[in-house]
Image (cartoon, helix red, strand yellow):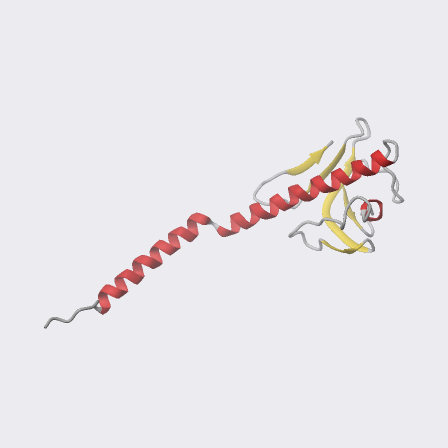
Length: 149
């Protein structure tokens, strides 16, 4: 009566083939690139939400953005609390935004409340055209994330 079943060599060959296929699939999917694209999608959403909130503020104030921090800067300035930043949070949260959006992977970007935050994004208003630009300087995989209205 012959033995039925697989030999050790057959099992090892099948495991080797499965490992090669799994490696090829993982490399084809490229998880780091997929995660970077997901973070960029979040950045697009965030900069649009911030810009929408700025315009809602202006609409409620007869077309002029009103903020205790003063007029919007004319050069790209980080939206954060502290030196070198434009403190926009109290002008938008909670009336126009539930919380301040922040970059998903920028160093130091976080939101606790309007006294402790760094969005990781920049804001500027063109002095000539009055158009407002929100940008994500830490966009990944070569993307340029900037919204102007």
